[in-house]
Length: 310
Ligand code: SF4
Image 1 (cartoon, helix red, strand yellow):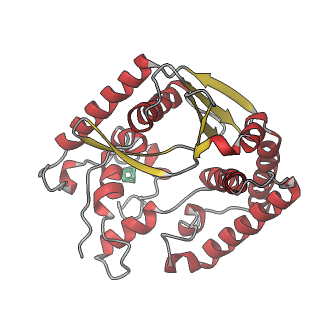
Image 2 (cartoon, rainbow, N blue to C red; image 1 turned 120 degrees about the horizontal axis):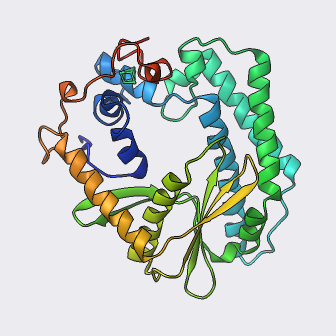
């Protein structure tokens, strides 16, 4: 059975359209079907390259994975009416470390290329970017440090204690906004016990744009009101930076939710406008131009090989 390439809006896809248009095309169209190892060469290459990560992105993936496991374990215990068990930081660090070392090894050996959808592949290995052992060690140490920060984080601790009220953790959701379909996955969404919800977004990077995060949280607010029936004035949204141990509260109320609705509508109109056949979601490569030759952004782009810019 053929899987249909559907046009579904997400915050990251909306942003991608405002970056390099050709990269957007590789991501959402050129790589389509490339999960099959016998796919045409360009589709396979684009698919593999779309899956590449970097040390910085991967740190976030590993720490998010540990946060997810910690919360889901507490939710399961709460579900079974068991006391929430302590999960010592050293055990969490060891779990993260084992997975992280396996990721590096699988990527370094090229084994990940047998299952690029499931295993981790680093752009550093794929493009043979020189990275010293000390730099890999520093990445592992940063994961160690952030797992420690996570365990000590007051919001993470409170979430575990209130595990019975957590409604979702990293669940991929799809819902309709007007005539657009939307994907999202909230890091953690917890009931406040009186009909409202608290939405938590973990961040692990150096720098984040508060306005950008606010827009993303607005979409989560839209989801909470529309799909979960939460009143618009009963949402608290926070982004918690695990790297720096900071937390920022964002307003998510009627104005932000309406802005999110508008962002979905205008983003979807823009995506449709770039298609040659909207009904079948067909995009022609030539309608998505490359950046100017020598563009700095190409240097770190995952698609630079399939794009001919390596
Ligand atoms: S290599 Fe440059 S032009 Fe090509 S997809 Fe990447 S950013 Fe765009």
